Amino acid sequence: MPEEAGADTRRAARLAREAARRKRQQKALLLTAVAVCVAVAVGVGVWLISRPHEPASSAPAVAAVSTETAEPTASVEPSVAPVSEEPTAPAPVIGKFDVDLARKHVEVLAGDIGVREAGTDGEREAASYISAELEKLGYAPSTVKFSLPNGRTSQNVIAELPGTGSRRVILGGHYDTKKPSPGANDNGTGSAALLALAAELKDEPLAPTIVFVWFGDEEMIDSNQDHHHYGSRAYVKAMSDAEKAATVAMLSVDMIGYGPEFRVRTMGKGPQTLQKDLLAFGSANGYSATYMKDPSKYGYSDHEPFELAGIPAAWIEWRDDPVYHSTKDVASHVEWDKVRQAGQLTLDYVRALDEQRMATLIGG
Ligand SMILES: [Zn+2]
Image 1 (cartoon, rainbow, N blue to C red):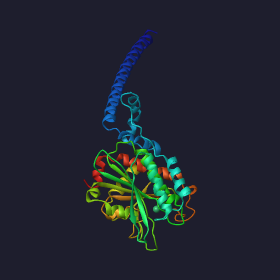
Image 2 (cartoon, protein in one colour):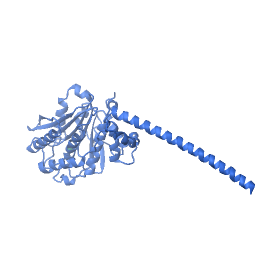
Image 3 (cartoon, protein in one colour):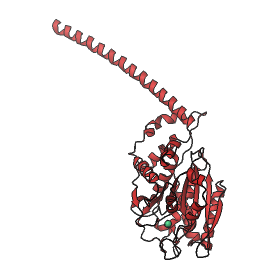
Image 4 (cartoon, rainbow, N blue to C red):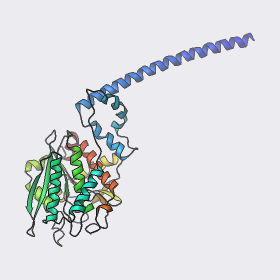
């Protein structure tokens, strides 16, 4: 029918106009999308070139820890790939924390060497092993001896990784054990994690100088609850005022291989900026760590003398380990995913410590 045919024609014409309009809109959208992609790619490229180790600090962290986290930089990651394929601008290789490497070190420390009581051959053998491993990585470690009140001599092993700026961050952990324990978790895990971190970070341009310290004698040498931490106390005593002022953070990595609770701890006596910032960073990146205060007037790890000296300090640990200080603290007792999480959080946090973040730790 004419009337219907006319309506059909009008409808057909309208549909054709709409189709044309949709095509124009699609074209415009496509052009906009292309323009945005190019802008993002160029922006990311410039950012990568100007801040070589910064962007990747968050990407592997997110991938390694949780698929739910949404750091701002994670969303740009797909755009990074095409840029990094350009031969003139290779993306820096930012690795994950190597828990398998840490496990090998724990097996040597707790298995091959065994009991590492302060001031004994076992402790000295461990110090030599740590020092030799650092030399293999290209570090120039120093072994600094100190006297114990019981007449024995212990030693700290120290290695520095120079930063691009003047601020300092200390990553420490004790390698001695409480006799008769071979100390796989306490503190083979922390000692081994520090070696794995030293291996992972050695070629990265970080803002702070990282001072790795393997402390001798952290454990109590007699029944007096305050007769401990001689390695870290000797270290702090030897620090110059300038070194103290430049040190924005000290993290004690101690017992990170067993237990249901992931903790960041302090005595609550020194600056609390590090524990707060580390916990906020951890929470934002999908880690389950929460705060716990040392329950008595004594600190329970090597953060103690640093905290008392006014340096932002904290202790990272998994707890509670019912077999610590016993012969049952062997490598097969360690829960390696706990070591991985603590090691990865430490690695991610150190990579995130730019000048601005470090200034906030010391109230600057
Ligand atoms: Zn310990």
